[in-house]
Length: 264
Image (tube, rainbow, N blue to C red):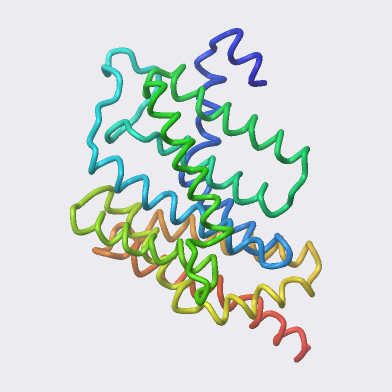
């Protein structure tokens, strides 16, 4: 599909690739993988998305570098240009998964996915090549940090990027940068930090559940996330409160479900 898109330079194909790099897509995907990946890998993927998304907004608006002239755009876009959010978040997501699963096939697939998303932003003329190169570079670091941590041995590796996500999102909100997205990222990261012990218990609990059970949980919570983002924006700071509660739901659902199963 990527080769076809490059050969034809077809706008619709590039838009399809671009949708695979949308930050909201990876937020939902991160929630699903939180429940479906084994051995606690899912929390690192979620941390990668939250850290990368928060940092990208902070970098974009701090640097405030322009996109290509709007008359050349082949798709809708908003905000400053560097680094590309699509490239950065998609790279963080796939890097976090690849580092943990360690499969050559997955590594190749991840590279193709990141290349497709990054090229789409250039071919749609909404980013300069340097924007996507910068996004990929920062995304690689975010994905690495989500798995390995930031060198603080006394703190769980996945908690460290979440703490930075809280810091970056707070700065974004104070400055009024992408307020709704920053509220969602801050609420989710903060609740996962507060409920980190419940997250650890849930990660162990999930390993004892069947794949259909874990998929059902992931899809259910993802649906709640979608509805939360869609409707809580109508209330001042509703997205922040809604995603804070969503994070607690993620942290406690597996444990509550396992307890419910024992009662039955």
